[in-house]
Image (cartoon, rainbow, N blue to C red; front, side, top):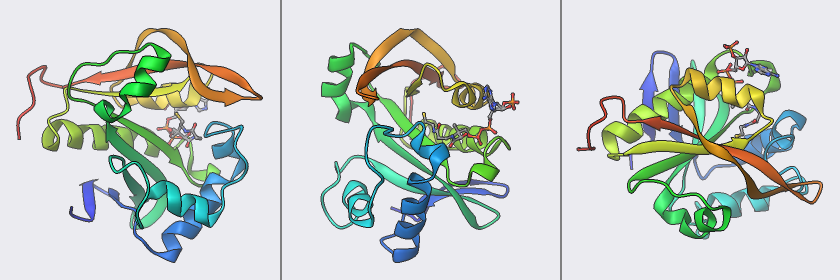
Length: 196
Ligand SMILES: CC(C)(COP(=O)(O)OP(=O)(O)OC[C@H]1O[C@@H](n2cnc3c(N)ncnc32)[C@H](O)[C@@H]1OP(=O)(O)O)[C@@H](O)C(=O)NCCC(=O)NCCS
């Protein structure tokens, strides 16, 4: 797979590299308060070993998720991962969701809180979903976010997504309670079936 997954103007989405600098920045980002607030809030802070294991670049991982760094003007500013929803059937069944065949999913965070709220998240989600429609024949791009994460909802709306269905209880927890989440979806822009 090529290193740069998608790029547009000063924004690029490239693969996470099996290198100390990428692992170190991911540990820092994941453990920063603005990310922990919304990303596995009940989990202890991550270690380098944990990040390496989750990413699976040295084996392990789920084998389906592609993990990427978002770069702005050549500087790493955040993380974005994507996967075919077909790999998450057990999860979808557990939370009672169904998605069309060929649906792809993604998750994102901006690493430095000072860079949040500047439009990077919306641009990165739009850029990655354009790539998934064009190169992976995605039928829809669908993501799950907490019902109270208003900033993420606004960013995803700017990226062309809309809320689908009713809020549901996710498997993620906050203070031991399963969190209420929503599904947001972006349809293929042309409404046609995918094709490479
Ligand atoms: C969610 C996240 C990825 C969005 O990326 P971003 O670059 O910050 O978002 P953008 O700047 O593209 O868009 C943010 C929008 O939210 C709005 N916003 C900011 N704070 C808000 C708040 N507290 N409530 C509602 N909207 C808010 C901004 O004004 C902007 O909308 P606008 O352009 O209409 O004004 C980023 O904020 C982040 O990493 N947050 C922490 C981790 C996280 O929540 N990840 C997502 C898990 S699903």
